[in-house]
Image (cartoon, rainbow, N blue to C red):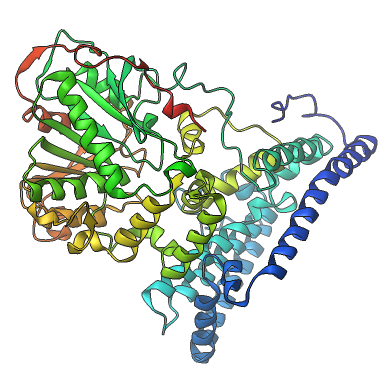
Length: 606
C-alpha cells in the first residue's frame, strides 16, 4: 500500500506539468490493470463457450434475474401506481429546486431531505455549505429513497423475491452515491486539485495492490494487515494449547487469581471466523476479563480447513469439536461438568448438540450461553437473500471447483455487502479516490482474517438451518438421531444485538419458546460484533433485560429494563450462580500435556 499523504500539496497551486506527469503515471501503471482485466475477460469468455446449456445459471449466481423480471412485470401491470410514483418524485425534486433557489437568494431553508443519523458519507462540511454539492446530495437522497420505496411497494412478489430485489436495489443505490465519484465528492475533488492528482496516483497503486493480493479479484484492504501479528499485539492473553485434533485446538488460559470457580468455562466461537474476536486487545478482551474474574477459561480454536476436510459434517464438528473438547476440559480440571458459550454459528452447533445430549442423556454441560446465535431461522435477517436452492446449488459448484472448500474471502464479501457503505464504499473512497491507507484497526484485521468452509459442513448448515429450518422443526440429523431442541432443559442465557443484521434479535428470541428449561433473553446495544465485544471499561452502548421471556417479543419489551454500559457484569452474575464454589487455580498443564503457547498454530493459518 502507499504511504499516507503529507501536506506538501495542501497549498500548492495547480501545476499543469504535475498534472501531465501524474496522468502519464496513471496511464503507465494502468496498463497492467487493463491487461489483467482483459485476460480475465478472455478466460471468462472461454469458460462461457465451454458451458453446457443447463449451467448458464452460474452466470447469475445470486439468482436475481428472475426476481427482477417479476418486479418489472409487477410495475408494468400497475401503471397508475407508477404514474403516482413518478409524480411524487417530480414534486420532491420541485421542492428541492425551490429550496435551492431560496438559498441562492441568501435565505435560510431547511433541507428537503437529510442523510440518516448513521450515514457517514456526507459529513464533510461542503456537502452542507456548498450549494452545488448540497443539491447533488439531496437530489441523490430523494431519488434513491423513491427508488427503494417503489421497489418495496411493488405487489405480486413472493417474500423471497421482495427480499432479493430490495437488497440488490439497495446495493445499486449505494454504488451510485455521488460520494463514490471524483467529480461529485467535494472532499475528493479538493484533494485532487490541491495535489495535482497525486491522490489518484496513490489510489491507483492501492487498487493495483488489492488486485494483486486477490489474484486478479478485487479484495479491498480495510486495515494495515502488516501491523497486526497474532500472538504479539493481538490475541495475547497468556495460555497454552492443551489438546488438538484435525478439527480443533483447545486453549486453556493461565489463571490470574489464586482461587477459581470449580466449574470451568468452555467457549465455542464460530468456525466461520477465528476465535480471537474475543481476545483482540488486553483492554477489550472478553477472555482476559473472564480469567480475571476467577474463571478457568477454555476456548476452541477451529481449524482453517483445506480439501482434506471437505467431507466433515456437523456431526463431525459436534463429536471432534464439542465432545472431545469437553472430555479434554474434564481431564484438565477434574470437573464433571462445564459451562459453555456458543457464539453465532458456534452457538447453532452448541444448541443442536445440547438437543443430542439431552436425547442421549449426556449431562456434561451445566449451562449454555449463546452470543447472537440462532436455532430458528424463519426470521434470519438479511442473509436470507443469499439463500435459495438455486444459489446453494451454484455455491456447491463453486466449492467443487475450489477443491472442496469455500474460500474465506467469499464469506467476507457477503458480510461486507450487508453494510456496503461502511465496509465497501467508504474504503473505495478512502483508498482509491483519496489515495490514503486505511487506519490500523484490530477488529477489521480480524474481519479480513477469514477462514475457509469445508463443503459438507457448510452446505449442510445452509440447507438444514437457513433454507429448510430443519433444526427448529426437529428434522435435522446429528449422529444417529433427529435432534429435538425441546428436550433441552439446562439453564440457557440468550444474548442478542439490537442492530444485528446477521442474527437479528427477533430471530434469537424465538429460542425462548423452544428450550424447555429456564431461559433468559437480553438485548445489547449495537450489532453482531460490537454488541458482544463491549467491555465495561468502554462505557458504551446499553442493554435491556427482562427475566420473564413473555408470550412474545412485544410482551418481553413491555417489561424490559434499560441499563447503561456493558452487559458483561450482568451476565457474569448469572453465570457465577452456576459455577460452583471456589477452588485452587488450575494452570495449563496440570491435567493435560502442553502442546504449544496460546494462541496456537491453527489460528495463524491463512
